[in-house]
Amino acid sequence: MSKGRKIFAIIILAIIVLLVTATIVLAVMPKQYYDAVYDSADGTISNVTVYHNGKNNSYFSDSEEYGKIVELYKKSSKENLLLSLFEGTLGAEPTIESYSTTLTLNNSENTYVAFKFSNTQTLTFKCETYKNSSGNSITFNAIVVSIGNDSNNLANVNVYICTSVAGSSAVPQYKITTLAKQHELLTYIETLELN
Image (cartoon, rainbow, N blue to C red; front, side, top):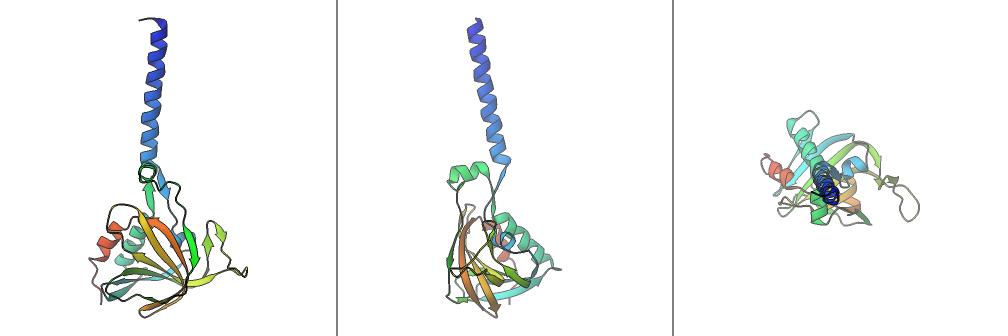
């Protein structure tokens, strides 16, 4: 084999090794999508209430259900870089808009998870304190997440920033649309005994 062919073979081998390494890294590295509960608040959740099929139940931090809901919620906003690239969601950014329609949480058509905080929170969006058109910071006491993605793919999810959640209704100020993969969370919610 000539010297030129040896160099060419080494270059081709190096390119193949580089492509395999890049594929492995992209398959392992996580992509974190906007997580409203932990990106926009300090995480001091007092309780989590699940609303599903016209029923609901609240769970506190000392319960197994609370831990599992929080774990699966956090997991829903993560995807590996390779899948994000193939799904076309790698550069997806969350959006925020003013929202003033009262949410009826206890209806039979939708599933929601309400995260209620032990103290008043200030909304952080894209790593900055979010301000309304008057230049004031937005404060809230709860975040309500719509749960509706029963597939293993990323899909748009509405997250409502609320001044209050009482009984089966919520009063949102803003709606954030982001991406999440909620199949595991919805599957778990369907196993819960709700009142």
